[in-house]
Image (cartoon, rainbow, N blue to C red; front, side, top):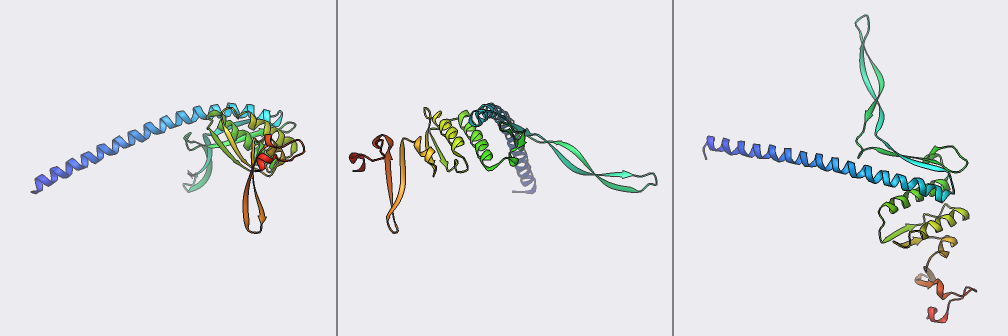
Length: 225
């Protein structure tokens, strides 16, 4: 292959690479636009569910979600004084952020309180707000199974009862596996699984259906067998 042929070959390869790069960039742009549209649609659906779910689980109050598509950013700017000297000063300016990179702000107002950021709520209120958001996301696109690992740990008796009622609303479409130490949560279950250690160092799984337990708390002989 002489130099002319090699130059033609390399030029063709370069053109091919440039065309491939252009196609990839166009594809990425298309995906980003479509992802942004779908994200906003899903976000608005979850936001609507969250507002109703928060009122239901708190027995009142209000809450909302906001996309932080604008942020304040510090920039340096040079200023020329009258004497000709140049100084650098810091200024704040508003910068637009792509919806896919935006943060999400949660504002909650439990009954009898002023609207605050979630970071200013108590431990129980944070847990209830997070449960409201979690179930709002779950409601927008339910799945056959959901695993909750001690999400009710910070809740008091009254709030735990509301949590149990909320879970029961989803039982027509989903099954829940709930890991808990809370008695009220156990009471809403159809089947209870526990781990006991009858012998030192030997764990044993125990499963009980509540319809196999009588009013005195005794397990039927058939279930125990």
